[in-house]
Structure formats: structure tokens, C-alpha cells
Image 1 (cartoon, rainbow over the protein chains, first blue to last red):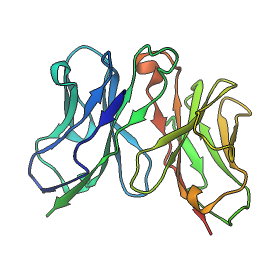
Image 2 (cartoon, rainbow over the protein chains, first blue to last red; image 1 turned 90 degrees about the horizontal axis):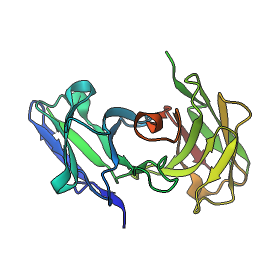
Image 3 (tube, rainbow over the protein chains, first blue to last red; image 1 turned 60 degrees about the horizontal axis):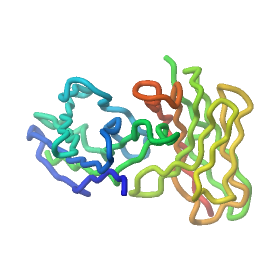
Length: 117
Length: 116
């Protein structure tokens, strides 16, 4: 079945430490890939996206993500985490050319990031 | 700035009392979406409008309806809210349903619905 998986429900890091949030997808072709962040009680903010081309994508707030076709992954990274990065992070996909469903944004279950001082 | 606006941000209703949530956009996008997000869960698509064409997801309960009177506005109507409908409701827009940047979705801040 087509799906997007975020293996880590909750991650805790210390401020200043590096961060990697994992995302894997299961589709026949490479979907369009997105990372969103959601602060408590807020809507979703797009961090970055991948449609095609360069597999290392730069986003806002110092985040980057790397698309790896061989691993069906699109992991989110940040070299040094700030306390304000504490939030929930959602990986999402839109399957390409999927018979009329190519509008449908499917989310992973999210990873909650806690940042310790 | 062009944006997606949702009103109200917080809505309290009583069990069984109809409620309407509002979304407006200044992006002039063709597509508007409504998502339901329950606590600690991922957003779940309820339905979307492509221009005036309404598209319901197969598992969206009949209790949820939507209206789009013009390009800028879209409403979510819950006819008889139950306790299980308490959630954050997110509105999103995209330029089109084509590929790549055309279907990138822009989200509003959400309306948190409480059912008493």
C-alpha cells in the first residue's frame, strides 16, 4: 500500500545539538515530498519541498532535507537546534500522476521534537 | 501579504448544535481544502473544491458539508457536532491540482473546535 512513514514518534535533543528526522515513503514512482512544522495550537508551516532536481533541499529556519531514491527517504536535518524548534514535524507526500489523486497531500503521523536547554 | 485566513480561531459549540467554520484566501488559488486534525494525529483530508467542483473523500461523514460561494471563501458546516468532532480544522489552498508547484498547499492557522 502507498504510504508515508515517520518512524520516530518523539525525539528529544539538547539545544545546539544536531537533528535528523526520518521520513520514508512507499510509492511506485517518486512522489512530491514536503516537510511541515506545526507549533502547539498553530497551523502548518512549510519548511521545504522536493519536486525534482538537486536532491539536497534547503528550507527555512536553517533546515535542509535530502532525497535518497535508493532508500525511499526524505530525511530532515538541522545542524544546530534552537529551543524555538520544539514543535511537531510532519512529512507529507503528493503522489505524482496518480490517476487524478495527485492533489492529495498524505501526511505521516508526525514526530514531536522536544528541545532540552 | 497573500494568505489563508480562518475564523474564528477558537469555536465552542454544544453537542448537536450546527456550527460553521470560515476560510478565506487572498492567493486567488483554484483549490481549497478542509482537513480535520485530532489531538496528536496527522491532518486528514475531508474534502476539497476545485473551482466550484466539490470533491468529497470517501470516508468523510455526511455530518460534514462545505460551501464555496466564490473563489475567496470556503465554509465548513458541521450539521450535528458530536464529541468526536472536537478537533483542529485546517483550511488549505493550492494554485491547481497539477503537478509540482501547482499543487503545493498553503495552510491557514486553523480553527480549534470544542464540543460541549
